Length: 361
Image 1 (spheres, one colour):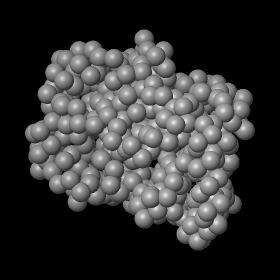
Image 2 (cartoon, helix red, strand yellow):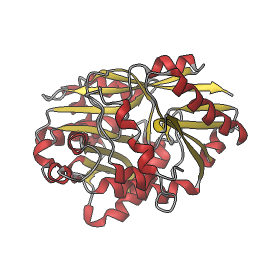
Image 3 (cartoon, helix red, strand yellow):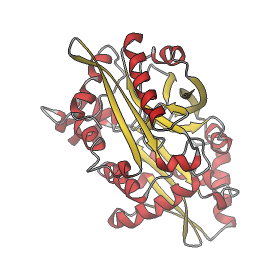
Image 4 (cartoon, helix red, strand yellow):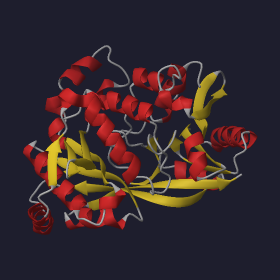
């Protein structure tokens, strides 16, 4: 881990000084993320970060990870991420070589990325859709990054899509499917998350997440402690009317988690609460008019039922009631046609494409 996490993070400001769509991270939050005493992720992973310097100034960063949970699914595959650099191969190349050398020394045969540090965190490289800022918990990078990735020998292995939704009436087909599902299956109920029982609700969500995402490409099993840590980080801006738990016969089997796009606020804070960042945070309800469907899934046993359409319909209804100006569903695997179908029937269109890469070591 960086001895000085703040310096590691602050290195990114000069790289993006001319990019109006970059959203500066909150430095205090990133410092907590990089702290093994705070973030339980490091109990199941070995990680090493590197910084590049020129004339005594930090000019680029990268991190490398061996995730022990992922080793059970894909032995020999390590991750790289936090790969930030200006359009200068004399910076990007030695950074990447340092990370891959470390992965080799730890027995890895392949490098996958970018993952900050795995698919449960920010991940993938933006390759199309640079003209708008990223939504909350999604990455952003310079247009030159893909060129550098290819020059380094990295090969594309998977695309991920961000779908855009404009406010308006939902497709009647989705509504009919949702209504018919509820009418035919009285054992199915849908409710909002109960913030007064937050810890219990998080346990239910973790159980659904662990099962529903298990077979997705690149998915990494998330330990209960890490799921709770990430949930606690999102708690302060969760709108319970936008978080649904779907139950069948009293068993929690599906979830839909939609976040207000806090990047609209974070961008104005420029990395910190001072001197005026806290004012933007206090005004967040007046500032935020965009939403991101962050997680939506159903346990594998119940995926033959059209429960995804039900979750999408109720999420859309709740978003419109909140005064939605723009919505995003992301990140969706290119081969996840069970999810892409309902999204496209609802009028969703791909407006950003992200990509994962691999290098055989």
